[in-house]
Length: 481
Ligand code: NDP
Image (tube, rainbow, N blue to C red; front, side, top):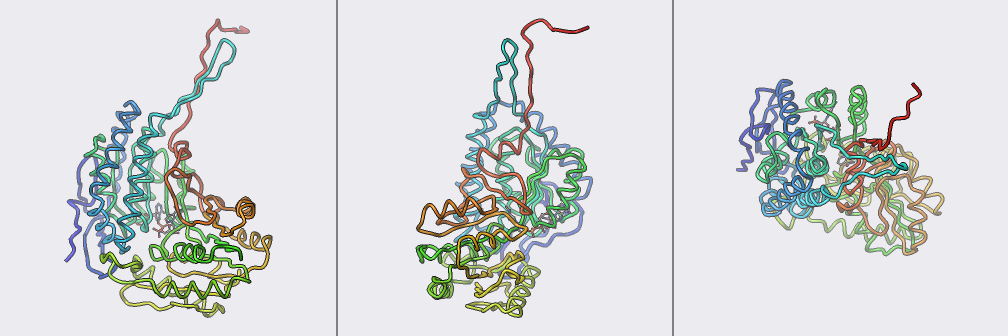
């Protein structure tokens, strides 16, 4: 019934290209229906994509930054014009409700292209007076960057990586997750239509081996990965051997701390957003919800009531608020975490059920302790762990007791406490009385094992460029020889 078959599997040098690599079968998670059949890139094709990007990069980097910016802002405009169709494709590719994809996925990608398109001509170097002589700096492109994406926000991830890279004069070869290969091809088409040179943004499909080839490719100057911590460690190591730059956006087990003076409705709403949006498949989710003991009963009662009202169903129905998980593998993994949480003594507040159709109910466990698997490992599904706490010092220590450091949130009516607690949390991206809002103006990234580098904002510019220093002698050369 649904046909999302692209013209071919890959987009290289301005056109669709087919290969005879292993098949990638793309299914719509809600029905299990096959919506497209693609093929993995062969090593030769990956080489071709990198060579084409290298050619395009030379021409692109030589353009005035304002011209580069104009192409990106035009691409943003085209995305906005086509948002309805793109959102539908994203829903088919990921199984996420159209209610989400229409306002979150491509719109956030368009924001990124618009933001970096505007920023491109504002990036300048420094002039360093040296008393007669002087020096100046130039921010230059790195070259060809590789983007490797996860499956939860495939199009947003492609845009978040492409926009700052291209704005700074780089080219990109992007490998989407094999599970969600369709959105990045649309971005490649749109960039060409917006005026990008052929080869500037190439898409190659494939599984981990294609990503690994990119990470080790001598023609690649930087690798930007969004994925899990174990994959990040492998890619970082591979990139290090070639002395490549990296950005790593990896997994998390982020704390969301709710103090007793918090606005109850806001805190409950945020905890739900932080665990059930995209069926919990979000890296920055606040999956350890620490609730101060005096608020626990009221918090859990309201949380249960609102969670049980979530509308699950057909992702293409605009009323649906909650869709299936991405794959049978993820479904099995999440179910196993639920069973383990029960076996380890968690109190099931609501949910826990699952269906053949890859749904897992929004699930809440209370009385979770710090040592339980549910409090330590990333589930990447709709399973919230609620933990109790008494004091501020205690909760900060417990929140930080993890290898992860992507995000953190605090709900409190006490402004000074909000800032004080955030100041002590080990996380790259934090919210006070909000959660999971990631406007392009704000840096997004992690500390500890959750990654390094920053996406979005001016900060991303530094991760897609390098500084050249130029010393200018204005007098005669003083030489001892
Ligand atoms: P994976 O780590 O499994 O995969 C990420 C990407 O890397 C995929 O495209 C994958 O290919 C590719 N890959 C796998 N092995 C290698 C390798 N050896 N070398 C190069 N590339 C490789 O993550 P998932 O796709 O399962 O995504 C879920 C994870 O992503 C979660 O941990 C989540 O927290 C994290 N994430 C982080 C975000 C952030 O911004 N911090 C945002 C979104 C997700 P393929 O899958 O096709 O085999």
